[in-house]
Length: 582
Image 1 (cartoon, rainbow, N blue to C red):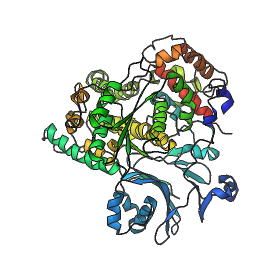
Image 2: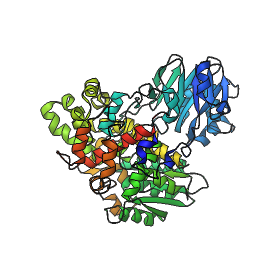
Image 3: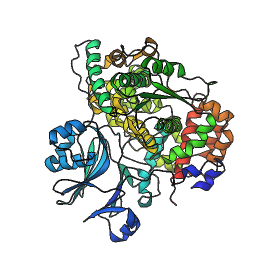
Image 4: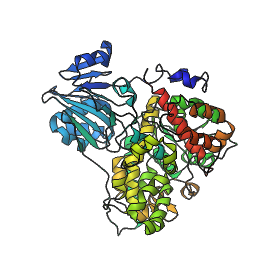
C-alpha cells in the first residue's frame, strides 16, 4: 500500500497506518463457518456468540427477555420521548431499541428518530435484521458472496472478506459524480444498505420502511405561512440536536444554511456556541467576511483555520483512508481538518448540510434550464439523464475516452441509478431534482463524509437540515417557494429572516472557493504526474493514461474544469492504494 505513495508524500504517510485509524466499533458474521471463523477476528475481539451469529468489537444490548440482541451506531434524538413511552430508562440507546423491538418488532422503526445503523438478532427465529436510518446519516455494509455474510458500519472493516475486484459500474458512476451513488460500492461483492431500508436474513429480503416523496400541502397558503411552519420545526429539531449541558460547535461557512443553524443554536442553547471557518490563505478569495459577520452577530466563539494548498495534498491520503468509498471533491481534507479543530472546544458539532437538497440550491438551475430548452428539442426522457450527469461537471462527457475500451464496453449500456427518480411522474421537475439530491448526494456523499470525518475526530456530527421531519416538510412546500428564478431557498431565508443580517440573507450562494486549476499547475504538477501516469498506478488497468496526460498538459477544452477532474482522479488513485489488501 504505502511504498507507491511514499515518494509523493514523503514523511506524511505514518498517519495513514492502521495505528491511527479508528478501530471498528463493531462487526459481525452471520452463518459463520468454522474455517472462516478462524480468520474472522482474534479470540479477544469476539465479544458475543449465539448459534449462527458472531459479534466482534462490542457486546450487544439484550432485550428484557433476551430474545433480541442489538448492536449498532445509534443516536436517538427523541430519546426522552421514548423513555416516557416505555416508563423506565433501560440504559443506552441500543438497549432502548432492544426493548422496543421485543414489544413491537419492525413496527418500532416508526418510533425511532435520529441517526442509526444497527443489526438485530432474533435468537428464537434465527433471523438477522439490518436497519439504516431514514436519510442515511449512518452507514452499514455487508458482503454478498460466500456462505458467510459479514456486516460492519465501515467498509474498510470488511477488507479481509471482500473481493479485490472493482465494481466497474460503481467506478463509472464515481467518475460521473465524484462519489458512488446507490447500493453499489467500488468492491464487487460488497453492498451498502440504503437509507430507510431494512434487510432480513436468511431470505435476504430488503424492505423500504421510509422514503422521501412529494406531498405538496397548503398550496394556496402564502410564502410567509410556509416559512412559519418551517421555523417552528427547525427550532424543535435544532433543540433536540443540542448536547444538554455542554458547549456545541457549528461548522460555519457564512452561507444561508450554516448561518441559520448557527443562529438557531445561539438562540436556543444555554451553553457556549463555538463556530469554525476555514480559508486557503488570505491571498486567495475567501468567505471570512460573511462567516465573521455571522459569528459576531450571533456572539459565538469563532475559530478560523487556514489550510494552505500544500496541506491539502499532504493530508489527502489520510482523508481517503477515513472514507469507505472515495469522494473526489476538494473539501474532503478541509472537512477532516476542521473536525480536528472542533475537538478542542466541543464534542458535538452541527452543520448546515441539507439546505441545498431540501430547499433548492442554485446547482439545480442548469437542470431547470435544460427542462425548458434542451428537452423541448430532444424530449425529456431522451435528454434528462445526460443533462443530469453533465450537470455534475465531472467526467461524464469524457467516459468513452477516459475508460479503457473493455471497461467502457462493459458499462456503457448499464442503467443509471438516477434514471427512475429523474423520470418519475410522481413529482414536479424541481422536486425530482430535490429527491435525487436527498436520496443519493445526501446519503452517499454529504452525510457519509460528515459521519466518517467527525467520527475520525471523536466528534458527534449532526445535520439538522437532513432530519427526516425537515425533509418531509420540504417536500410539502410548493416548489415555487424553494427555487424560483434567480432566488434560491426563499422559504428558508424567510423562516430565519429575523435571526440573521441582511447581508447574509441577500448574498448569492458561491460555495467554498478552491483554486484547483492554479494549484495543480503551480504546486502539484510533479506529484500528480508521478501518481497518475505511473505504469503501476492502481487506475492504470481501468483508465486511459494518455488522456490524463493531455489533461496534465492542459490540452483540450478543459480549462474551466481540469483541476476538478485531476483532483477526482488523484483521490481515486490514493483511495485505491490505501485500501489495497495486505
